[in-house]
Image 1 (cartoon, rainbow, N blue to C red):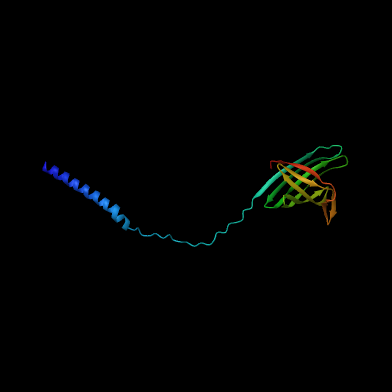
Image 2 (cartoon, helix red, strand yellow):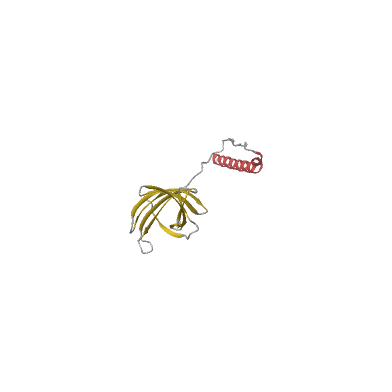
Length: 177
């Protein structure tokens, strides 16, 4: 029994000492203990060179015109263009069938976009003859609108005669193959 009482006293004393030490630590020593300051290592690197990202956008359009009295030619055309920033390249091909001729044509489109207008050069072969024609288009929703004027020759190019009346020719957007 004496031993049991001594054990209880020892346990009580240990608990009191631990509680006392804990109180002393939290109120007195915790403010005085300073952790060593950790200084991060500074690594100086050359500035990263970020390459300019140029997004290419491919679009395809088609136009099918039935022959009527005012426009006696049936026309089927396809345009495929790729824009990269404001630079445009592509292909245009088609056929036209009418009362006095039937032919096919194919060529490249190249140019740039300025203030929303696609200023393109159509470099093509028709009936074995090379031609270059300046063309202007607007992109409106799902339509690529050609602003067609009567043409005149200038320095080896067929160019729009803007003194004449303009006609809009609409190409409808389609899924590119």
